[in-house]
Image (tube, rainbow, N blue to C red; front, top):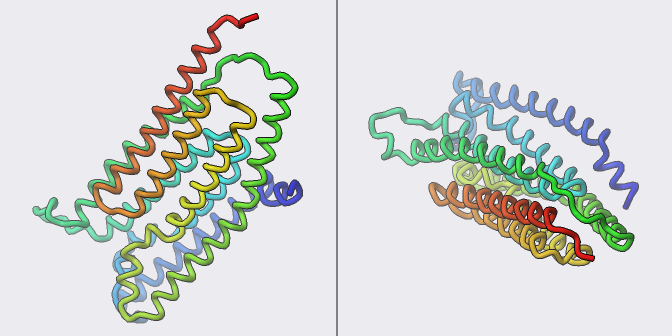
Length: 298
């Protein structure tokens, strides 16, 4: 497992993955843009209609999708290093999904006086405001995650327990990498098969395109978070740490549920998940500060 972790989640693997994803993102953007113009000029034709091939702005959606996949890899990469960074990456991914959705919304804006009568215009408004709010809350979360307070040094048994927990996180992270790749291939294949098999498959498939892969991936993250929560009891029974880890699981569940709904409820659940995680971390840090200021009992 150590060899697999060093090959899949090392610094060199991360750098190679970054270059590969950026190259694929650039090529995919050019291909998507070319398809749009070829359709507009009448040089090619596709069965059915799709909102992602009607406007050149929508071409930005495709490279953003590959960048999101790299962010998923970074989430797994940071899992063994820091739980708070791992959770922050979840929030960054859901924010990028909202921003990616903005590019799709931009291609469907009606730009009329009846702005609040159009579902596309309303969704664009929700996503625009939500992306700014999420960006601010993630900033606050990262500020809180960097706060450290002096605590009583761990004894030998506690140190060994922490090392075992870190090894567990490395094992989970290593297992998540091939699972992540399989989910990505399966999700894209299932979506592409739907386009081929049904005459109106394009319209139906693009309706829920934002849910492709990420709905299943966040389900997997919930199981991973629960396993980490249960095994965390082996090296700590501090109440504030248990509550923090439990709160992070609830936050991930709220993010997963957000994929099941649309419109204002979707954005409300995403904001609620991040605000909940931020408040949990804020109270945890206050608890840590209070304990660090208490005199050590003899």
